[in-house]
Structures are given as C-alpha cells and as structure tokens.
Image (cartoon, rainbow, N blue to C red):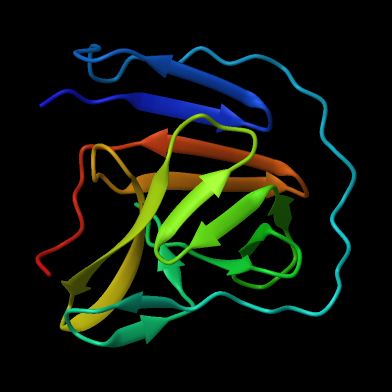
Length: 150
C-alpha cells in the first residue's frame, strides 16, 4: 500500500512520496509562529459514528493524546485548552486545515473495550501523530497504524 509520511509545521507541508523508505525523516523548514489564538468561549465539535451511534468530543492521535476542535475559533485545541492552532474546518467527520493540502478524517475504532475517535489521513486511513508545540505550532506525522477494529 502506498503511504505518505507527512510533517506539517504551520504553513509548511513536506511529504515523501509513495514508497518512501520507512524511518526517513521528512524535510522541514523553519517557520515563524503566528500570534496566539483568542481564548474565547469554546464550542467544541462532536464527532459521530453512524454505525454505532457513538458521539465524542475527544479525538485521539497515534500516541493516544487527545485533541478537540473548536468550531467558534476554527481551531484544533489541546485537551487542557492551553494550546490552539487555527485554520481548521470540520464537515461531519472530515477535517481540513487551511495550511495543508492533505485531507484528514476522524475514524472510529474500539480499543480496550472503549469506542474512540482517531485523527487519520483521509486517503491512507492511518492514524497520525500530532504534536502541539505551542500556540499556532503544530506537527503532524503519518504512521502505519490503522484505527483498532471497529
């Protein structure tokens, strides 16, 4: 299966193409952080699995860290709300980031007997590793892990 390992840092997108060597570090470039997001009231997005009628605000990454999406600020927000990255839009379970050409999607699975939502690459279906470094500073890495059995 073709796999694209991607690293996003603010407006930068660097991808190794299909068939890239595993473990190869993607190229990155220094970028200047944007101004911090306004800490206004949260209107968190709920994601819904139609097949099981499971609904959640929590979206897990590959290391099982949780992020939320704030519709009022169009932002991805850390679990504790201390870090936000703007430019995110949601449409159902589809996620788009204005600073990326890659589509993302929330997919569902069951892990340790618990239903969960996972942040995945839309095309590959694999769970991504998210790194919220600070306000407006985000890294996204592709993995080869799929959401656990639905």
